[in-house]
Length: 108
Image (cartoon, rainbow, N blue to C red):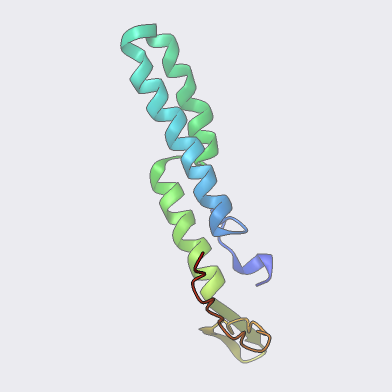
């Protein structure tokens, strides 16, 4: 899909978005978990986590929804207006089916 159809919080792929979420939630969780042992200095891990989430956990979830819908929906606009339809599924050209071979057990 063209980039103008993606929302502001969407990523280019679901895997990239999930990786950003793992980093963001990991940094925030690590900051909270280390606070009792390290002190308030550990909370300095929270701002980079928020940057990775592009704002807040709710923003990350909204971006995940936008990323998923951008890969499943396609917007077509012309002079009369815009329509929304399912994106065509990519076809995978599979080669001819391979025959399974079973080897007979060997006796020694």
